[in-house]
Length: 231
Image (tube, rainbow, N blue to C red; front, side, top):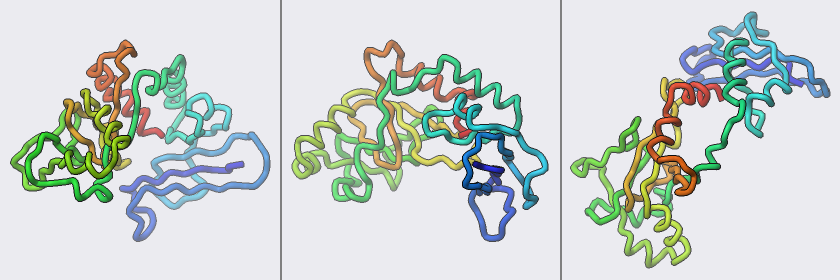
């Protein structure tokens, strides 16, 4: 069982030469469902924490997914908000397919070119909130030699990419620093754009009853961004 679980944010700099957010926890190898101390945003080395939320695994199951991730909540008010969000919740997978980018930027480097083709390449750094940078004049702008890729990768791999890029897709940055105000960063790309593996894409199901722009709006909401930051 866990005795306490502490999150120290990146900006706190509690430990020398540690530049990332840190978690400290005390685990005892006994079977016990009792409450443990959850403390977030700690700014000192004081252990165990003086200010904490008392929580148990049953309560975590009510507000988490199947992985039982411990949420970074500070008090009972935040717990109640999370609990309300999870009432009658719907999985994104019910209305969309989620996948990593079409190509690996390292493995498939030979197909990336600075010469303009019909197939634009979008990487993670091109994506900002509600916007994707398609400026063709930037020095680092790249395209894909799709004819060469199609010739060498084989029909099965290329047919999957062609299916995905035949319609508009939502793209998002693959990694967003935990300290950012906005961690869910989404944009919309038109067909015939190839996504690098430094980004992920969401392909909405045509028969799901949701417009693709509505999906972007909901996922980009302040409430879901707050929910995402908590886990």
